[in-house]
Amino acid sequence: MKLAFITIPVPDVGAALAFYRDTLGWEEAWREGDTTVAFQLPGTDVQLMIDKITEEGARPGPTFLVDSVKEFHESYRDKITFAEAPQEIPGGHMTTFHDPAGNPVHVLDQSTA
Image 1 (spheres, rainbow, N blue to C red):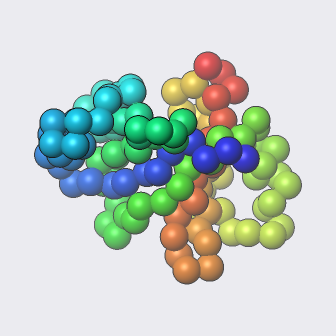
Image 2: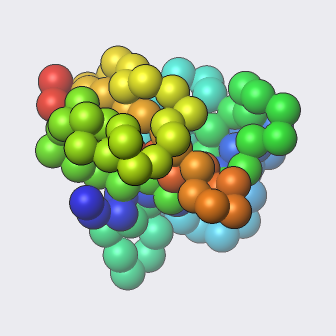
C-alpha cells in the first residue's frame, strides 16, 4: 500500500479550488468533472483530493493505492468491515473501510488505466 491522496470532502468545490489553488498556490494535478479536483502537494508524491460531499457527515481520510482492490478486499474481508464492496471508478476500482475511530480509509487501484 502506498499513500496516494488525502481526501477532503467539501460542500463547495469552487470555494475549495479557489483556496487551495489561488490562495495557497498549489498546482492542480487533475480533475474529474465538477466534483473532484486533486492538487500536487509541494515536496511529496502525495496529492490532496477535494471531493464534493455526497453524504451527510463525510470526513477527511487517506486514500491508499494498491495493485488490486478486489484482492485487498478478499484478503481483509474477515478482518475489517468494509463500508462498500469494490466499485468501478475511472481507471480502476475503489473501496472504503473505517478505522476503529470511524475515520474513512479509501483504497484504490488503477488496474484499468
